[in-house]
Length: 145
Image (cartoon, rainbow, N blue to C red; front, top):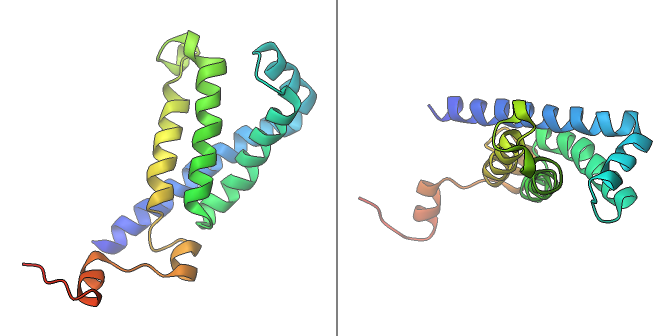
């Protein structure tokens, strides 16, 4: 069952990473229009913000897929997503089909969950190790029932 959970976490990280990469690619492929769009939405420092969002989405997407720096990437994804919520989608209501914030809110929350628990099939887990709760309690001398 543990392998199924870890495979589900991997599949989820890959999907979220791909979504962010694709959104970053859209920004990159027409950066001038992206900057103009940020300007029209009154995003502070539109050029810097566009570059920041694009870089976080593309580089962070790759990092998320392989599972490196997962907590940091998750926080950055959430910052970008919440920025999109407040500057672009808040006025559109809830549903994404109507221009609302449903998708960006979902991406912010799911990114945090996956970033804080990327699973065993993440480079973070291979590099830094991951102690399961049962191993931690044994190592700390704590007994469980």
